[in-house]
Amino acid sequence: MDALIAVLSKNALVTALAVTGLMMFVSHLLSKYLTKGKLQSSAIAITLGLGVAYFAGVYTQGTKGISDIAIFSGFALLGGAMIRDLAIASTAFEVDVKEVKKAGKIGFVALLLGCVVPFIIGAMIAWVMGYKDPVSMTTIGAGAMTYIVGPITGTAIGASSEVIALSIAIGLIKSVFFMVGTPLLAKFMYLKSPRSAMVFGGLAGTTSGTAAGLAGTDVRLVPYGALVATFYTGLGCLLGPSVFFLTINALFG
Amino acid sequence: MIIYGTAILAICHLLGDYLGNTLGLLLGVKANVGGVAISMILLILAKEILMKKGYLPQVTQFGVLYWSGMYIPIVVAMSAGQNVVAALSGGMVGIIVAVTSLIGTVFVIRYLNRMSGDYETYSWSIEAKEKTA
Image 1 (tube, rainbow over the protein chains, first blue to last red):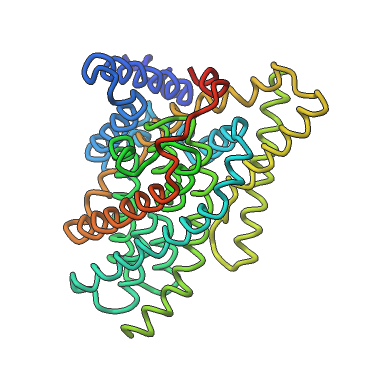
Image 2: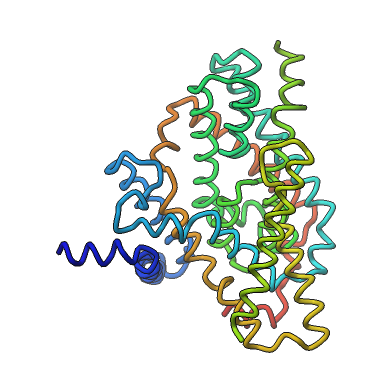
């Protein structure tokens, strides 16, 4: 047993590939026999991954899900930002340039609304729930954009660590929601064409949420959504501590 | 050679990351602005140019397509490495803020997509369908 664990830990990345393949296979079976193919197997696999991450987090008290367990440490590399971004970029190889050009303008509108709408709602709810100082309102509102914009904004404007942690939690819920919920809500959101995927990417924003959500809906949509979503976090980090904070500060300061 | 395709992808990725960080620095934010999108655009350009000149044989393309085929497993691995416990630990405030802003976002997506109205009419070209099947 020790020898086996040693092999698995030593070959962490290879172990992660094998386990991921196994998870995909299990999801394929679940999709086929449990939901009769109605729910895409990739959506099930992503949900399964999040479930595994939850139990691993409870078990290890760590922050990196399953990759905090030594034999699964390869997941940190395989599912990390480096490989993920490489894979997202590679999907552009099959992009139809005409579609991108057609949706350029509405993609930009979606991107702006995607930052403004969650921020305003987040800041307002924060106010209602008793966080009435502009710094906390801005940080919580920024957390409603993504779990990266939240802490970056909070740190820039000097929010307390409790509020920053809260903003990360809000952003993570958003990301997890889009990973699991997008395939289920695809019809409601009229999500089908490349153009609609670009609108979705601009509004949902989180790279992980958009990428996984679209993968579970229709993998052909992924590059279009990702193309827009990847600007979101940067734009949010730009607007959060500046325009958004100044506006909130002027209104509630 | 397969590695040529993967190398093209890798170079686009690195350039995009670099330019995205530079853009972030210029704008004064501590984040990568659109790095992945820049890599994607570079990759599309590289593909168009090389394709026209006939420098993109099937094998070279495979070096890129392997990674786009690995995309979903990689996302699954990513989701298994998320801090889900922290996401659920924000308590009621976290959940209420998140849920309300999510509802708002979903409705705006619905509104914008319904406005553009290509849900009923859009269909993928047959070529694209065959590739993913």
